[in-house]
Length: 185
Image (tube, rainbow, N blue to C red; front, side, top):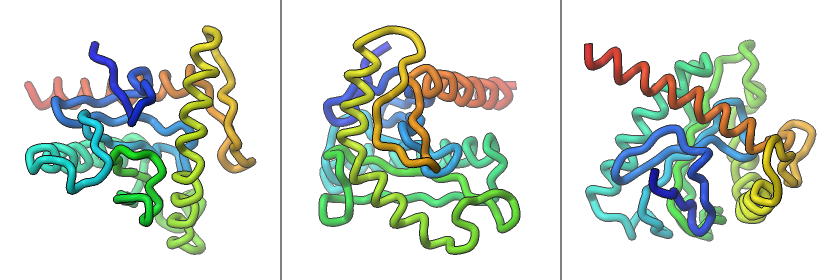
């Protein structure tokens, strides 16, 4: 299996979906359960740096991953966001699209009382992302097993272990495989 890089960080173990031009990973510090990222395979800082084939593959992947993640997490809809460039809040210089499963009021969505509060939360998460990913990579490679990732998570977003992320990625991968098997029948 070919290594997957998110900018310069190896995220291969977090991946649960792959195409020739895009892949999806579970999030190190999800804002809501099921918060994932869809990323072009080729490292490109901005959407405009991607070819039309890569953009089409990226957003077809967003659509496919979103459909499965929405169902897997019992969501009613999705927040889909791409911060395209530093001034827009992008902190990792590699295009990526956030998919956040959302639920209607009364079903456990942490932003149900002010739906737009998800955007500042996303911006805060994006700001810390480069340091968090590097810390996770260093900590996970330092020893084996259920390593607690050293991140500046708050109470609402506890640190995740690499083991937790791999387990979630494997579960989501199984859902995609089952969907593919059902479609083939």
